[in-house]
Length: 154
Image 1: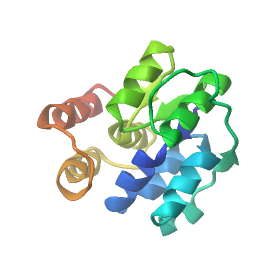
Image 2: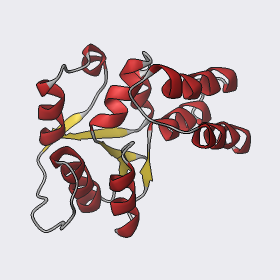
Image 3: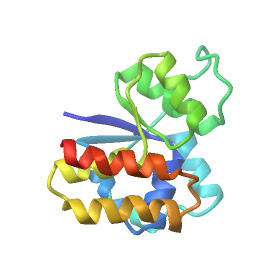
Image 4: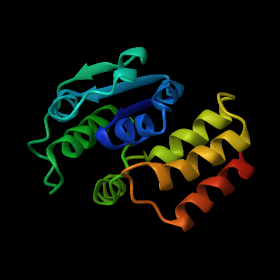
């Protein structure tokens, strides 16, 4: 079973390529209240209402990281609950790795969707490329190609 905590990044970026519903490939999705408030400050993606998730509170007081509030809250919840952190932020990934928290980004969600039979290989690869060309996410060619290579390994 995969328990995952999302910060705003993957929610926003998957929504930008009309693939937010793929977050449902995790067995249980937690969204910290702080992350939801960040989304509300912009626009909560309408597709979020089609996904099953639980809003949770977080206690990040002892975390000691310099991340934005949503990423800090998501990392705190992932640490507390031994969950996977879903983030596209490099600093949040580094902080998660420092705390031995498993971390994946939007590309990882697409790989999981492929391994769980929600996407075929060509659709997953196309969406990975779309993350690079059609979203606000900065992602290098190397990261996209690595993601595509993970499809071959799955």
